[in-house]
Length: 340
Figure 1 (cartoon, rainbow, N blue to C red):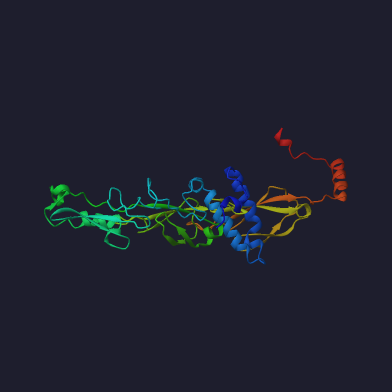
Figure 2: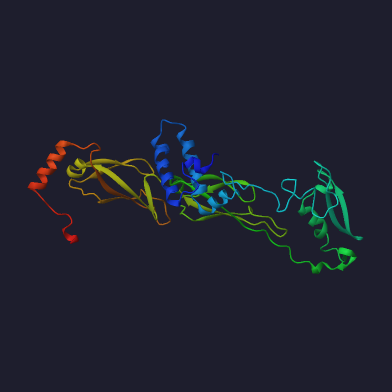
């Protein structure tokens, strides 16, 4: 995926407001509902959602700017601190090992406990010496418990009861941004976890912004148990609707003659457009309630609150100007009289 700043068309120095404004503008332009004849619009819309998921979230944006995650939110691995010539590892092998090896041939050392005390063994890639830290620790401690008295470092004896209880796994956290449609209707999302795994998460209907989904056993493992993954849900801004709890709010543009004379207008909802009868003499700001057209909730679906916004002709009209002058002179009125 491209750099999220480039996708949204904002500089790296852009503030939160500028990023949100750029996203809303692109979302309105590229929303699949407004581009039904363009099969590529869904892909472009998904791309701007992914970009906003990264730099629209303060923590993820900082992590991306520091190079800790990539444009898809996946963690970047930079190796262990203090590592030398070999990326992602210690220079030439484990620290302190005599098996530094030559160029291109990493040599590792493994350590294990036996009746004779600590023993050192070497190996190369693919051999016994190339096992991970977990295998080495298992050799050192895992086989000692329950087998009576064993030898420790330097031949010093220790008892199995000296060993602490094996720690449990640790929970990890991740975040995902979903669309308002997904929050209303549910779905599935692929989520990248800090463990490096990519899992499919089921999005239940009616999720609120900031809610968490717990994925059992998807955290970091420990000798005692495996932790969980906690996925925090963020609902992306919609180009038309604003969330108000389970209700949705919408600015509904109408013409001057529709407001004056009344008429039927089509109102967009998450389930498709419906007709709304506008009474004659409707003022700008009047709000109509469409029952059950909001978001699902435990107590039942919310409503859609459509507020009227009167829009004048884009290029002006001389006849309208003349009519308004006549109206002003013949029938003046003050809508702000109660504000004095």
